[in-house]
Length: 335
Ligand code: SF4
Image (tube, rainbow, N blue to C red; front, side):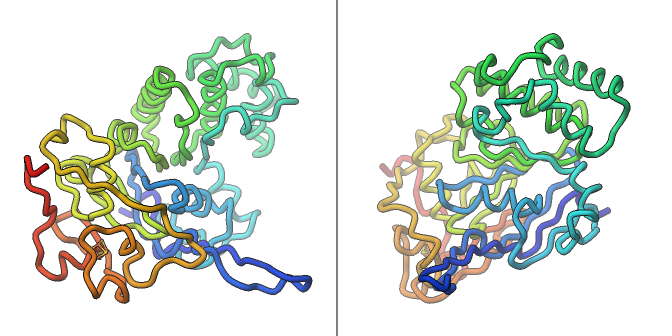
């Protein structure tokens, strides 16, 4: 059976225009050939530093941005080149929750109208049925139904994110892309929203692509995790393998910066990442990570490593594995 969502070599490049004639003078390689799948009821966490292309990847696979290359399949159906009309049934199945619960809700619409708007756009139900559905969604996400008449500024950040979740659920989707959905919230509220998302997943067999930079949050909610660096996936596996045995130096560095005790973080060597993420306009040749990698070798500067299955179900792109070097190199207790 085909996965719910398959992404194959997906690319999103943004042209850079300069001069009075708006000549194309370069490209931003925001997403540069990523592949993964998400099964029904599964959560794939997509992590990386800010600017690595993870949010663009989420928007592109929903076709909120037109892909530059690659394929997107939903239950085996290729939706990459569908126009707006033919995308409509797929839009119902795939929804998004945004990072900023302040900016993502229209301040001039009541909360009830915001949640019910997708039902009107997709011509679902009568006005009475829509009102009932909206009230039910409010209750399901933990908001009192009488709050449908209130406006976004009357809600707290956590409540606004609940409105965003209710809106995403309105059309009974199968896949929700969460674009950093809890990173603008206080830590205590984050936990409530994460727990709500997990409850909804169990209840409706939802699939999530959970885009985040916070590894602790990703660890909590994900079944599998993909790590992105400068537009490419550098490692992907189930969350336990990733957190216990990272097979890419970039993942090792990310985990070292945010230790999670249950994965033996205290025994792990500290790896400090130097410098910022290079510009996606002119990414370093070869392995994009070579300018910051503590293990970089000569070949890393000109040859891009392939994403390979290093262990069953555990994919990584690093020449250390091609060279037969056992990774991780860090020995427990070798501070
Ligand atoms: Fe580091 Fe080279 Fe591996 Fe890239 S390929 S992560 S530069 S060792």
